[in-house]
Image (cartoon, rainbow, N blue to C red):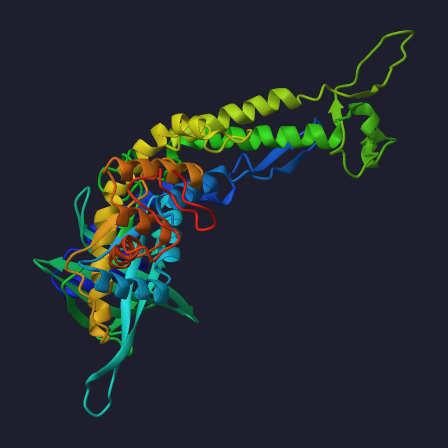
Length: 488
């Protein structure tokens, strides 16, 4: 009895049909392929065999792990320090900022994005431990938690192509002859979300359901307690599951080319490479039992064993033993690697040159080369924004239940949507926007000083009164550096 059987059996106890969870089984093959590229263990590429004319032996190529670099680059590009969450006012925003630090919100969301972009889907699951007084049962505090849930633990139960209305999060443990599943089922029902937590113990073909110890079996919340993280790319692999394709799914051929070309380059540079060709008859010596020839070498991996070359001169046989030093193909292989890198970047939406091995680009070159990447970035933001807002509201609700009230009724997400260039140039651009009235002075301070709106406005008022030597004015021809005279 597997997890699909367990979910179906539990569904029957609640008069629900959970048979659609099995559709995930056919999707696993794609995820396993993406996982092999992400981990750099691709059958036939990183684990290969070679035949030298005498025997087969393994080839272990080191992976460039391009797929991992693509997934990581996308995640870190989306969730930079410029990615901000704001609530209805500065006070509520500051409360959430403190909660962010306590639960490692930013590192968790980045971790989930990397895994989700690598395998097509991951999730962030919010929960809380509530502390109560034993005698009065009143809440005395609590701890909000945020966990990254990998693809293997996600089982959609009720869904259409784009939306999940019921999903199971599963943790699996093995105990002697029993498999124990801890299952949390989240179901959206109207304006509320119900969470059922249970344990299923499987022995052979028998399953026993019991509520998980020390956990309330059923809870109801105003917000969904999870966020599904996946790339906003067309899902060409399944029309029945609301899971995304790996961000590098269309770049697999290029990823393979990178590993093969890099391996050839390493060999050329490392070895030189001197090739030794040995005639097949030279591999053997004398005769073994029953007239069979015995091998002269324990291993022939360092040789290329070729058919015997016969030269009929008075009946003599000339055996071959030749050495050859091939041309080192460094420039050719570098070109292959660079071309494959560019194709992989284009295929995954990063934009040409994002992972290239090249001289540092100028700011102008970056702006032109990354324009397409920034357009693709906005597509991912559109999908992720709704998921993150829902998660932030859930975290605020859980925090309130622990006694730390946070008003999550209004949540806004701010992304960094400009091409990343050097900070000095970016500041200069923004100062021009302030001068033109396109950017408020307090917004400038919020962006570069890390101040809240309230702090920024207060600081500007202080500046107007002439109390700040580092003055930022709308007219930047009168900029004071704090160390010299006013420049006009």
